[in-house]
Image (tube, rainbow, N blue to C red; front, top):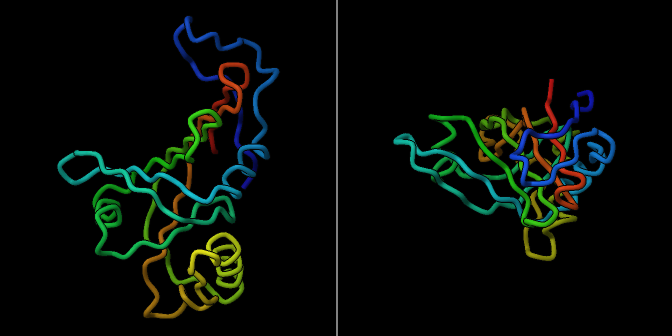
Length: 168
């Protein structure tokens, strides 16, 4: 994927968002925050439209967010009906909010399975989560959800660097 386009979001005048595009965040800065984060907030919509938010562990790799989620959980059942999802990092001061859609992943091959396994172990091994590289492979694989963003809003020093990203 090529880097998304970056610009300033449209916000009310009183927010103090600078007009020039100078000073916006780079996608590399935001992506680093996505890679390094330990906890992510996932927001989905129930079939009747009520919101559902849940914290998740996950890995940012290959321009997407990958996380485990049993098909029996509320958020995965929601995604089967309405694939739209919002992903948010923990901080409100250094905010990263992504909008996009998610779905259950097809089984991943051994090469990408190793990438996911290593990243999950690195981040969550000390908490007892160490999936093997074959955890998401083969016909019995399940529970891996992949989220791909369409739009993002981020800031590390609001309002000076507030940036909107659009994915092509």
